[in-house]
Image: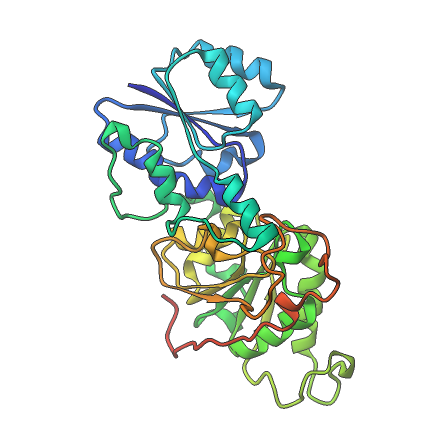
Length: 341
């Protein structure tokens, strides 16, 4: 059976589809699995042994449809379910199944705080899309395959981090999904051990603010931040934001003892690598079904607000103006002493 899986974006969503790809390849007799995504995300799938061919949305939908028609698929598995995927399914004219995005239920939760969301992870809902094929959850979790060329050598990290470190992925697609910089500093201080900050080039400046804070001695710390001098005894920060591609960041994450991350793609990559995750939630909520999958995790969130969630995605600034979901969040967690795992 020749099967096309569709998920155009983004990083986390694509990683969350990997159990479906694996199950189709290993549980359907003679399955040939193709996957279509945007070009900028193709590297997430290039090393996946369960995918026979990756197609990319690049020069336009018409060109993509023309190339897909030549493949003569038996089944389309639409895990994105939007206008473009409907156009592809119509053009291919073969049997197709589509993922239920629960847009109505999410709208009720965001706008009226009426919870009609199912108590089920999105991965299990993805898998339900292909249950008619007899697909079962193999309980192996998410997949993320790092190319050998992107494995980061130990010497790329400072000597202070050679005996173990914590990764903190400070990025986020929207500002309301990220801690303010002052709170990032407080979190790093609470972690109280060597930290590698990961993110894109757009996160470098925030990373530098955090890094330089912990380079200062107690007498020269920026008092405007309002942080106590007695904090931060063992925190040494290495700012890796913008220095690594995604696979290299995953390679560093794989070697971390623990991973702290906002609700973003790196959270799901860390889960795929079976790391213990501390996930930080601002305007979005784990109830949407996208919390770390099949790995040990702790949720950090402020549940004492009647305005949350204010969006299923995020904003550039708090629509209420107070940002209490992040500003008033308690950093209630425990890190046992352990070596790098």
